[in-house]
Image (cartoon, rainbow, N blue to C red; front, side, top):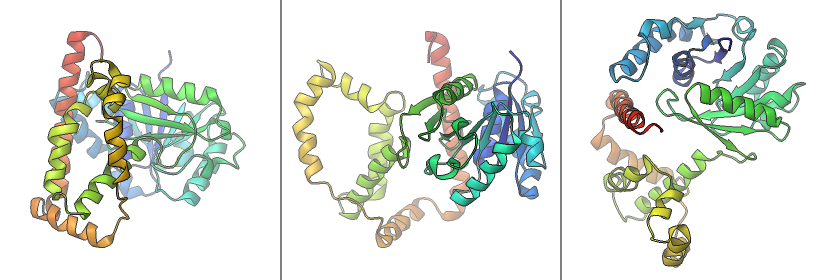
Length: 316
């Protein structure tokens, strides 16, 4: 098989992480950004991140060999001309995405896949007028995709089934864990699930049932331990002797009564400000970047652990 060529448009955190994902998998990567200053710092930042991955045993080649697969392209046309896949990572502005995808429609090969990393905009909002709209889709990653492998694939009503099938194969080849969203819905899957949990956590905080630190503990040292290696459906399937049917019979009434008392959170600025006060006591604002780096290293350690277990068991 010929070496795949990918174009990554936008060299911010998500774009750089995507470049690592593809280069680590052996793909050739053209990285482009409309802001020259962003491009200047991209390769050094990518090199540093790959070194971190190597320190946890998460890459199988020398750092320089991986980084050498990333080429900087000052011109959009040069970046996308020979691409099998274009991964767009620009601002969450419909008009800007629409303008960029119109250019990509003309600049790319007819069989190239055009994917957006958008976290909330349906593909139909910026691809409708394109001649080759059938090859466009959303490929929404989790930040950063070089550490969290999930990618949500969601087409517009006119996206060809073959587009989703081909995209899934490419992301799997790149080492990601793609899932298909069967039809468009705001927020796709991950942010709807995350949003539901955030809504309840913020509501409980607003109503004074617990402070922020204790609610974080409930997730980190409770639900999060199980959810780091199994999903909610597998969790309940294992939490009753007879599986999900047994679980629903035992606890369905309890969950219905909980739902009846749920108070939606309206994202009140006063409550968010109160939450910020509690968070800043734990983490001063000038330490957020350092803590984010700590988070990434913890994710690397977790990935290294999972990789070691997979090597022993023969699967993921």
